[in-house]
Amino acid sequence: MAEFTDAIALLKADHRKVEELFEQYEGTSGAAAKKKIAHQICVELKIHTAIEEEIFYPAFKGKIDDDILEEAYVEHDGAKVLVNDIEAGDPGDEFYDAKVKVLSEEIKHHVHEEEMPSEGMFAQCRATDVDLVALRDEMLALKQSLLAQEEASGLPVAKPRAVNLITA
Picture (cartoon, helix red, strand yellow):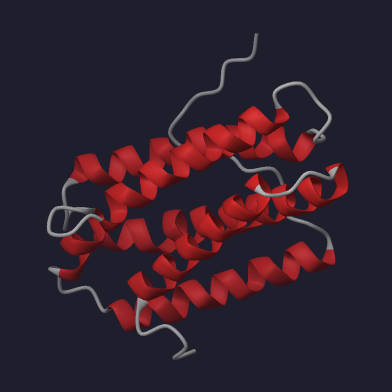
């Protein structure tokens, strides 16, 4: 479990992996290849948002700027809407590539806010007394469990926490 020095290193590694997948998607033209990469992106994001929302964010509630945490939940929900839509669609569908592109842009913004030096979420988290190594171990356990679930039966649709979805 020491592959990542602490919880923040684990989250940053996830960020780099998803950025790489978005780059791969941009350079791919075949429908089957696009579908496969888009699915990988969606799985990575479902797992990443789960470990952040269930373990990481709650550990810092009341210890860092509440606005930053609340915005992160809302940003996740925006991503979840697109993730579910992408998962339900196919590369030939109208707006499919646009949804992947907008998801990429939303994730870039979210990552920037978390990783920004000094005032970013991760910088604020490092300044607390939270044990980031213990947090990493807890997050890795959940991540491994979710990866196993994905391999066995697939992950369920992503459920927004902060945004109330109103269907037309």
